[in-house]
Image (tube, rainbow, N blue to C red; front, side):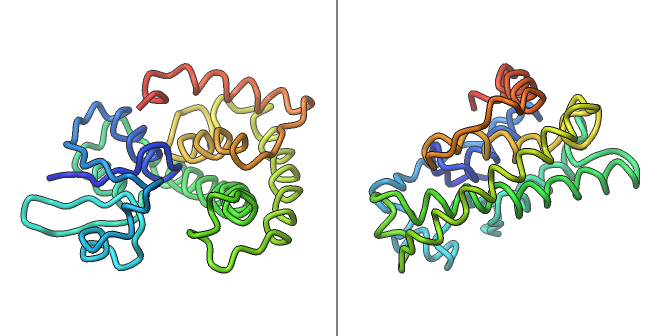
Length: 203
């Protein structure tokens, strides 16, 4: 088994944080995304979308998409439960993970990919106007996140979950996307400081 990893890119990092929370050590195959290594023939043969991470099992089976990889390991190693516990707990984690992915991670990524000069070869066509349009969307959604975190320790309730991992990599991606978190979002800032101090955040 091996995990093709893309370094500091959000989705590879999301998977590494998840594995660290599980206490799992999966052999990594580093791929230099800055040098467009994810577009190599080897990576394309494993994932025609040329995206990372990619998990290759011992029998050659390939799983792509970070959340799908995390779900695979959740089934093999259910503790700690990072996709929620019980019907309601799992539904809440799924709800917030999707909310963060669609309404925050998506706009932050669009802002970065469509405005950063280094992304011109990645995002074709690169549409700067679309990148700029997504910056206020990300800031607006932070207000909802801050409200949720006013009464919850973690984004989906009182237990750390994959939704927190998705939110962490998204918040950390604000800097390269050149989006500033407003000072009034103190609950979000408190949460970010807390989850950033977890050992897994350094994975």
